[in-house]
Image (cartoon, rainbow, N blue to C red; front, side):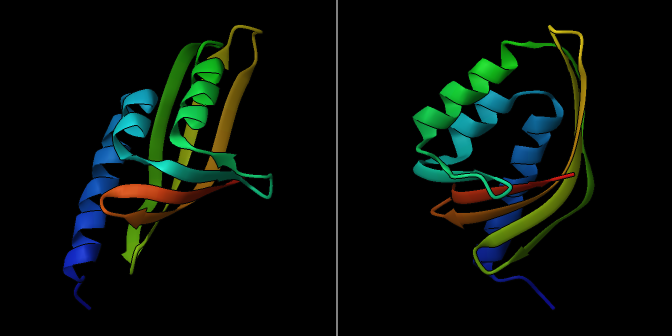
Amino acid sequence: MSLTNQENEILENVNKVLGLLSEGQFIKAMTEYLDDDVLLFEGNNPPKVGKQFCLTEEEKLLSTVVEFGGYKVLSGPAVKGDTSFYEAVMEFKTNDGESHKFEQAVRSQWKNGKIINERYYHA
């Protein structure tokens, strides 16, 4: 089954985002690909609303990171309609001496080349 033009565009953008994330360029990926009015969900928590708020929260987290262990895609990305999916593992150490490993499935809804709604399912 072939992808539509919209799905091909989304797949291209997802791969660009994943390239930035794999290099640890989280702020750049968010700045370039989040819609100004994005809703970001961590599991079943209430959403983080708006690109600026999401960037501020990410900067707070990143300020505690002392070692980036990588962001590796395990499966995907896949695209259907306006939605992309992939599975990844992110590892890092924080300034409190803790090592973190997040295994996640990510669902992103896209509009006009930007993510308008995203949910992270963590294990």
